[in-house]
Image (cartoon, one colour):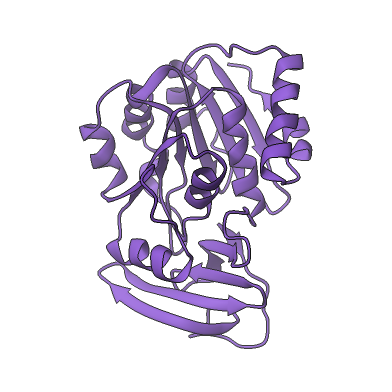
Length: 261
């Protein structure tokens, strides 16, 4: 989630740009704006939920989503779960560059799903399934040991969903992962090292890496088992990922550091 600098025109005191669409559901407004070449999704606050270059909707514009993509370095993922859809940028990216993956995207709000398809060109392809579900309830119902990587990016209008920082949620993600699976968590601030969420992560995951972007988001990469790849192999995988997606990921890769547990 990225704060927006002010531009030419306000929409109800929140973001700047040309408003294209607005809808309200039980949780509030969902707003689509055009800002130059970008299309922006907002929950009517001072934050972008998604920002998509409509000429290349599979290209990840936000730095933190590019950083999250590095989760693919740690496991040869065939089955991927996205918790939180937004405008569908990460889902679109994965479905475009990895057509062999089975991708489940879980989103609480039907209106957000509709907007992702209608305004952000989320592709309707067989290997990408989108489900309207509460993320916690989805994890409770999903088959254990069934997904290779979970990308968790749960945000509301004014910040991160409380669910993402709960011990039960972390434990449910752990149970859903395959034995070599990885959990990728996007936090607006780095969790306190002695807080409950980090205690759960330390207890469950033997390998944890962290990276952050200039604008402030912190991403944790949590391995259910010790990582299989040494530094040389991991660097080669990073270079191959950059070549595949055409995004400047090496800076983020070089900044990753392992947390001492």
